Image (tube, rainbow, N blue to C red):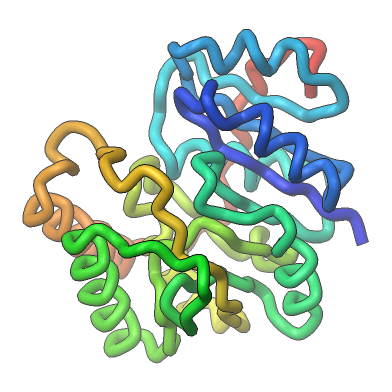
Length: 245
């Protein structure tokens, strides 16, 4: 089974080297999607050998970075794609847990609320409330029985990626994903992971810093996803990484 671990990064100079060092212990194929970083992340990545890399010339958004990862995994014929964040929330040592769970599932998603861990840290109140609200609404509408609609620590079978047509470029991308997964009848499983907020002060940016506007945006993503006609996967975006992919 060929596995690719993809890590979207935006201004993660503080974390990217340590995260890469840990991920290398569990996966030999690693893709970094550098989403227009301006803090020196790109320069640090220049000295990292043995990784695949896609660079967005400008910041396109969290969803756009994952769309690039989806295309890369399909184009390079990987059997399973693992996605994880680069801010310390996701522990690379749990990658084998995702891979063990994927044997009878199409998508395995981490959940910070499935059970408690000793190392759990408190979630920011607004984030926990919005997560619980949107997760409850998704379950009521699509019967997915999720406990954490927003966790980015996931594993996808290639066959699942081929059935998805993700276009949402922002933070609401996971919601479009869940709507399409439900409509396509994909087998979804959650695994418990610790709830780690190492820097609770980190902001989304712009209007997304306002909880009410963030909640309204997420609901609009859900409504828009319901109107999707689920065409075939869009044509792959060009790889802006000469000599590195």
